[in-house]
Length: 91
Image (tube, helix red, strand yellow):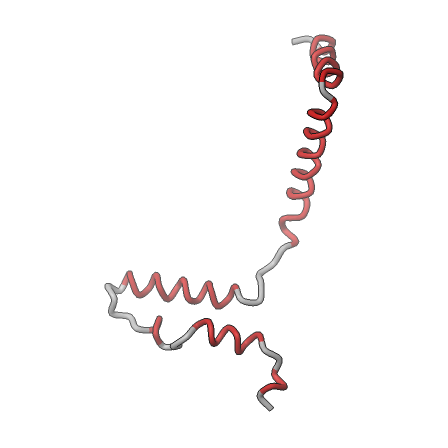
């Protein structure tokens, strides 16, 4: 396809429905923002507990239900809430 034919095709699409063009530009802009910023997001405050809990569950299954480390901390959610509360509640 020649450059002139491609340019005419793009211009005909733009002229036929400007909303489609605006939507396409917006989608491309969002895609660029995602690609440029996805390395800037880090781990959340409760993610370490979820990662440890997931690893404990996997180990429990892999050990054929023998490894009881999963149950060492009775309530993972309670521990999570205690970690997130300000420390002045405990002093």
